Amino acid sequence: MQESHCSFETPCPLCGSTAATTVSVTDYDEIWSNLVIEWGASISDAVKMSHMLQPVIKLLSCATCHLEYFSPVIPGSSQFYSELTSSCAQYYTDHKWEFDYIKKNLVKDSHMVLDVACGKAAFLRSIKDSVVSAIGIDTNPDAVSHSNETHLSIFNQSIEDFSLTHSEQFDLVSAFQIIEHLGSVMPFVSSAYKCVKPGGLLVLSVPNRARRKDPGFDPLDYPPHHLSRWTEDQLSLIAAKLDAELVTLAKEPLTKAQTIDALRFKELRELLPSKFPGRDLLIKVISRLALTFPLSLMWNMLKMSKRLRMHGISMIAIIRKPMANGKAHNDAQRSQSW
Image (cartoon, rainbow, N blue to C red; front, side, top):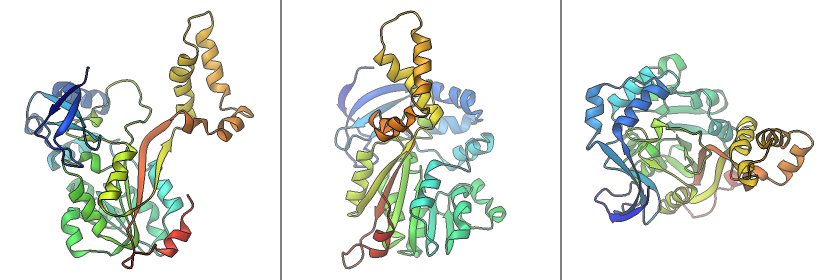
């Protein structure tokens, strides 16, 4: 769809600007239908109607911070998430790339960790034996109900309320793939940041807008589930708004199988655009050989995945709160291995 430039009443969830560009328009019926087809989700008619201000939804690009966001929109309610998670067994996963990344690079045995919107506490369960304390909060009662099974402290509370009584108590506060669900981002982020000790870390992950996507319609990337789409520029802006240090931005790499598919269906087809006998077979062979030894050594040495922007779904921002005296937290600084 051709882009059009307008001023909209719906403000950007990140910067509040109302100047935006229309990127696309999607029918809500298509979103609901594909939630059933792709995820097996069972969403009641009452919940559907409560989230639709009109039959279609627009994807906008903020003219100020370039966040892509939907309008008009009603964020997913607790009832929406209750129905989605209870009918979609694969919604919560015990493994995410960012879990391993954070465990390897950040978590220390002296840490007190808070995971915001922790779901069924998969991340907390993975670190609970290697930290001083691992605490979770979530506003979805269905997620919190599993706390007895995990033997973790999980509270049915918003981060805004939790931060009022837990200011500067945690060495690491994480929020994995949450802010893309919010109609207003900074109140949530500021509250999570409030819980971080001076010198501590706030970890935010989002789906990477520039990731390699499978063809087809992913309804979870639309309202009422996802309300916005992110790049590294918007994560950098969050750090600036907090007046904090952006330690690093990290992007999930594609797996070997995903990389082969990317080469096969995009890069090599663009490199060999002309039709000739055996072209498809040649592309298939080259895509597989590129990641086999010894060619894989050259692939890794030249950092071809990064050069070709072969990124997976997740992107992480690691943000450090300054010490009260303005100096960097020396212990945390020494422990970084970027």
